Length: 441
Figure 1 (cartoon, rainbow, N blue to C red):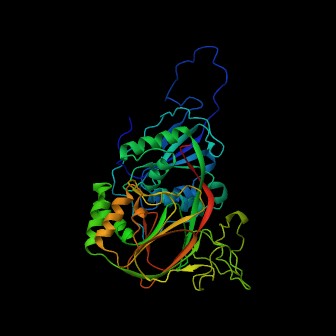
Figure 2: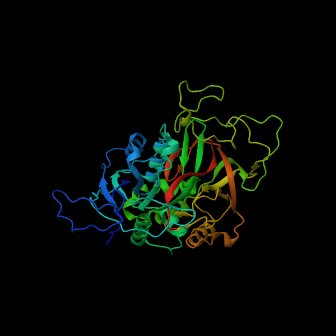
Figure 3: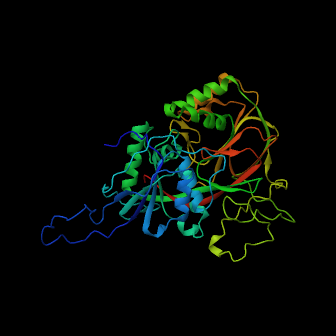
């Protein structure tokens, strides 16, 4: 029986095992000598390391030889997965908080997983595998992958999330995509463990984010500014309360409701490319998390496979957005939130229409002037995904392919996949089907 996840961030790395023999053995097998070993065709879990310092998972995934592994399985909150993907391509935000306050628990070796159901047309079945464990958040893992020279091959390594944090948004989203009902923390962990045993994986979109200071990040879950981000970061001190920390933080920030000034622009998902006589140069490629070089310069000796995906929909932040973009006329917001999965938290269904690879950023923004009572109703309705049915005139939702946010002041906090980011101009675009993740069907 799986216990409730209250453990330190952990990453399991699964690796290949020999194929199961098609013929039964002629004689009964002899008793094993020495330590027990997994049978061929079964999975084995082993711990690579324990959390030692901030961004340790990012470093491990960035530097590890991934050819021996089939799957990266992260047991933590969403922040750790962000770091892992960064190791593949981009490091985590410098302002992020270190996930070191939770209790640690070792993962026993030699556990086996049953064979899963046959794969369907789109998802592919992972081979039976060994698994080992290293500390990470999913966000750390993703960005660790994107920083590798062989990132194109590395991002094809399927990722799996086992909920072990407070928000668990990606785990809740995958549980939702699998057709399962809303699940509490213990049941959600069990459902995700079954998904791991099945071994089916499919493609997932990532969003490339570029900041005015020259940092490039890859995000799998969300970007936020304003009320929601403030609650997320400020409630860290209540982490021992679990998911209830967000309820407490929401009530506290409703009392001192703030308004944020900035300019928001976006490219609608259904917008046709605009015709331009002299189109501006797209944002150049670069190594994730590092200062982007000018468009006319190249990294001497850089290998071709090291070039990251080009942000072809974006122009440099110093230039105005293209004419076919939409600029929001209002410049006072309570929050701006761009989400690419269905769930904001394990019990908050923010974007019911979102899918793993729908090629869309689901952009929400709440304009100034909304009352506290209305905000409370919105978040209560979000538990069932019916907040848009309230027809609140201050809340806007639009599917987009790219967006830009330019705050008027540097005060405040932004978040990427639940990790803190310095408040500065930022823009991002969707990159469809860039990585792979384990799914229920």
